[in-house]
Image (cartoon, rainbow, N blue to C red; front, side, top):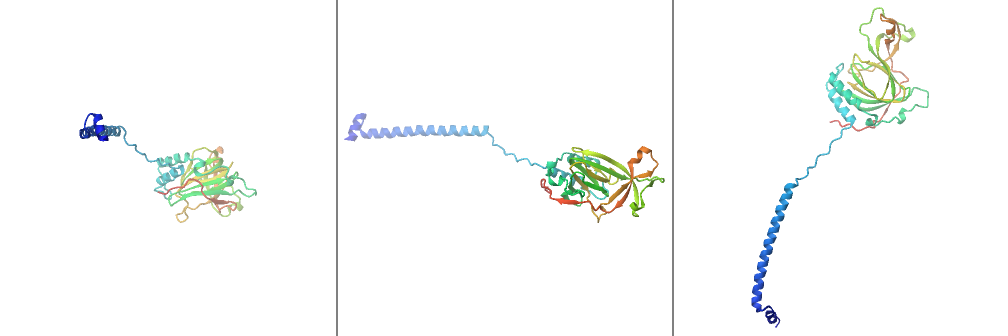
Length: 304
């Protein structure tokens, strides 16, 4: 009865309603599928357009930060590639290394003036000097001398070596000499026999005799010029970054020698020039010289 009543209501019998319903359903599905396909096509086309409009982001590699001391090490490898006794780098290589050194600050090598080895000791003995070793190979060496006030690195030489010294902070007095090659025949020294100790004296000319205060340019000495023999005296607490090429080596004849310096009386130069000369005499390493080692606390060097 329900089916007949339903047919009556619709004005058609059940079979016709079912047939029409099926047909309408199929038509509806076709329209739905068509719309769906159109929607899919439209979405796909839109996605392609968006894909064309939005290129993929490229991830750039992170920039490698090179520390100043690493840059110094790399530069030394280049500048001293052909290092040997008496071999001086070319002028452009000299300036290349000087430029790198002049950029280095105390913090770049892990130093501050407040570190304990920059303080005066309680005892009245000569204050110890601290040395921080950074690197050494057969071509060059890098290290830092840390001097408390009044600390002294006695007069010594650098045979066959090119040396860069960069004052990192503080004030230091530097006195340096070069040998006089052609000594006048009328030159004579006034040195007491007790001081001579039967050792030969040799005439040298003063190259530098001045105070230096950081910041200042790196000083450079050469095998036969620039003040190859020098003495450092700390006016205030100070630190010096030293680069030697090649480094000291007893087997290769590069032995560190210490000297006394004495005034002279006769020389064929004007009176005002006399203070620019001295007699140097070899001596043993001073007994009161105390150099102690301390770990380097700056950035690590990568030896690539």
